[in-house]
Image 1 (tube, one colour):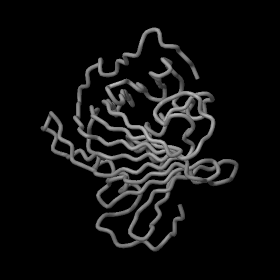
Image 2: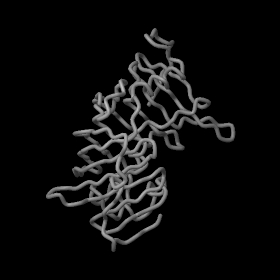
Image 3: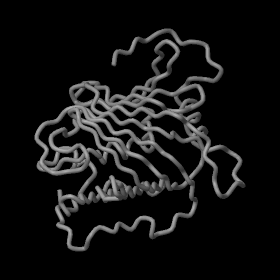
Image 4: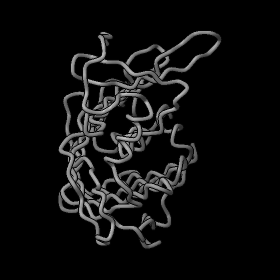
Length: 267
């Protein structure tokens, strides 16, 4: 993506970095966890697959449990993560992969249309290190660009678009070659109701998330299978049909029920 730096345009609110980050926090509001009914659409190499299931997400503990089934309620996969540790059960292979969330991205012999790291990033925009960030204006858009410096070389690693309201509809993670590696597009932001309505500040969450992964495996089925060989762009679209905020999620929500005799593979 080419960014043209223009003179700052007048704004209703300050566009300093602290103010932008504060605006994002205020827009998202305070919440701990949610349960959502999600339809997931995967596409790569001209093939498509769809599944539907429940996604549980704990924002503070960084827990994810996503169970998704295809036609006739046939289970396709179960993905569970806590912080950066993950487990991914592929029903077709009766196999559970486990390891660090970064490990599955380039692991040989495993193809998954669901990219754990991309999902991890898509559900909540990650923290912005102020010392490595700068604000860029592009026409009527405001971007925060994040760089890293190694051996005296400054490299763009991430950029996010911030709307005047504080939403983050667009986020890009870059490869070491300065090419987009993962593009996250969030849309249809809605005010979500909470069971405890004593909190007055709204909670705004996207009901649609599109993940474009330019390292996605594309051979074989685009659902969740084994045997990846080639890599190109893959797309995962998450449509949140319903969202229920939960400030006290039960412990059993994070229990994965794959078969006890499933093969275990550590990455």
